[in-house]
Image 1: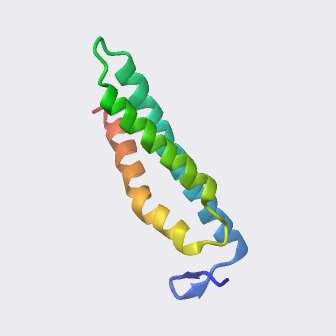
Image 2: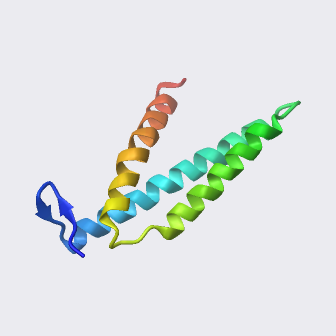
Length: 98
């Protein structure tokens, strides 16, 4: 299976780096879900619907991370494109003190 990146084939090392970054990005989103669940549970009147939604999102991310394969360049590219900006935005918001 050949991977394409900007018109050239990825080296094994490039593919491995992209795979690890995709796994880390999913892991950061899972951590965000866990944080949101924890913060909601601390409230006097936690919203069970929100908690259930975040648990479902966490479970979906676990499945997605587990099913991610080093040889699946298109899925890795999708994770990087779809989730990378979300993680970046959340990091920037947290860094700005908001």
